[in-house]
Image 1 (cartoon, helix red, strand yellow):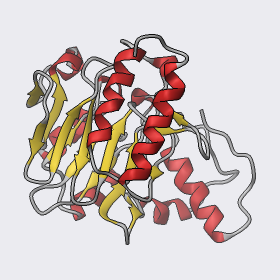
Image 2: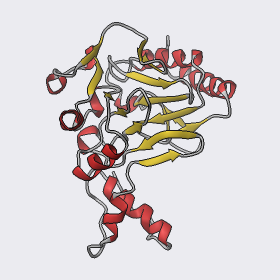
Image 3: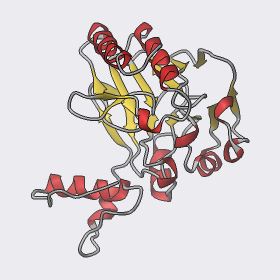
Image 4: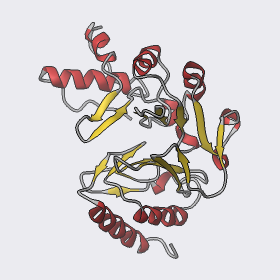
Length: 258
């Protein structure tokens, strides 16, 4: 769902509005008249998430309705670039990603956010990674299926953490040097201070998902980049663990035997 609550009043606002127009999965945002500005804005994707604190991590934009509007990311890395989940396939975005060196891997956090994975695979020849429990007919030909409970690794700096609950094969990607966790639909922020596991769309077990959330207490990270909701930044690992423990305690009152 997309909505415009206020018209842009500055050049920066207008640029952001056009970025939202391009990224909207349902094409619900429009300009009153066609504008050539859109050509310049198309060239801005992928967008740096935070150039100084998260170098090499980009937000792809171009959300896909087939992935329920989930966000996708691009990680630039000397051992091979990684697409995290699938944006909507467009030639413009593909050419822009090629400027960064394309993608060696496409890591799919779970079965919901696969969108145009096949088109990206054909374009870049990237190896797609998905847990076997989330493989469906549309993803049966992914090159790397994960089995068991992990963890697994991509190279030396990325760990894959099995976090079932939302789906049986939900997996988070942990980028160790930058202390970033890509969570898919496992965990995010939905308000200024409200965390969420999106239990209203849970496919398997909320209790299982909360058990999986406990695994994150053992990981040292400061950033969460989710598929849905807002990103999260903690001051340090201690603040992260305090926030997770408080959230788990809150949920324990609502769900028995977590």
